[in-house]
Length: 373
Ligand code: SAH
Image (tube, rainbow, N blue to C red; front, side, top):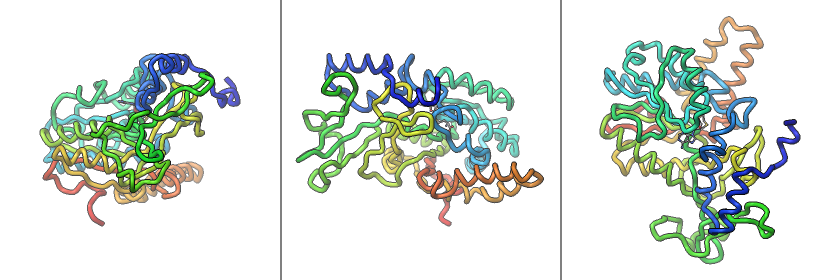
């Protein structure tokens, strides 16, 4: 397919089926739409495509610079030391993509052979295609991971967990402040019945859904809730409290809960209409770190951060590592390394919109990078 043809929305079989379903049963929530568009077993975006990297639809920090994974590897080793160097623990990655981050983590963690020896490697991944890619890449660094469909399937043990750009693809619901009250924003069909279109629920949201007071909010405002993300943060926290450990969550998102429509789709490194060609574009929303921290704290865990990714990486030694890597390299190689490091850390690139947050078993010392400066 030529690049130009790829830019024209095409009707996917999933879209046809959603249109028929909505015509028969009424509109569906944005969360249900996202679940199908991303996770449908045969037609979901992550199940069928090759989403990540220069040839895919989007790129991520570990794909841009090896320093990202190396610093996180050392962060995990320090966390293991802070935990008293347990003889066995689960090293868990949620949503490992092409396995690049874990390969860099394991390479850097070789500085402490005891860490590697104690770690059982678990990858939580829904996509069979990406699992295969993870297996190939990790085999090359001598690792033998085990896979789980969901976090709850990972056996109980102290955990060290990392999740980069996983929470942003978990389904969200949106609520819009209409004339006098909140209504859930739903996915229906256009007037001519030919395509998917946004609409609203006819009745107000259930009372257990906590929204900002309508009288203090302007008409047209949007509030987003990621229930699966909050549930996952709570599950992680319960496990950390019971068995010990830490989780490092990196993603783009906001420091505190707020208003705004952050639902977006990306295809071939460009924005794409959210409802067009479901299954062919990545759909994400900003992560509400305050909501995740609230869920984790309610389950008894400690939460550190969130803080800007650039600040976090710099505190972990990004500049020093970059200079070390550039030693003895050609001018062109060094420039590529510098460009990558800048991209993941500079505020106007990925350094500010991306945040890092640590969930921790209570009683552990402040995690590296999160201490008060
Ligand atoms: N962490 C990687 C990839 C991020 S893309 C990186 O930084 O490059 C999101 C990843 O999460 C993909 O591997 C995708 O298949 C996986 N994923 C999406 N939804 C998931 C879910 N509900 N449970 C587990 N993995 C999921």
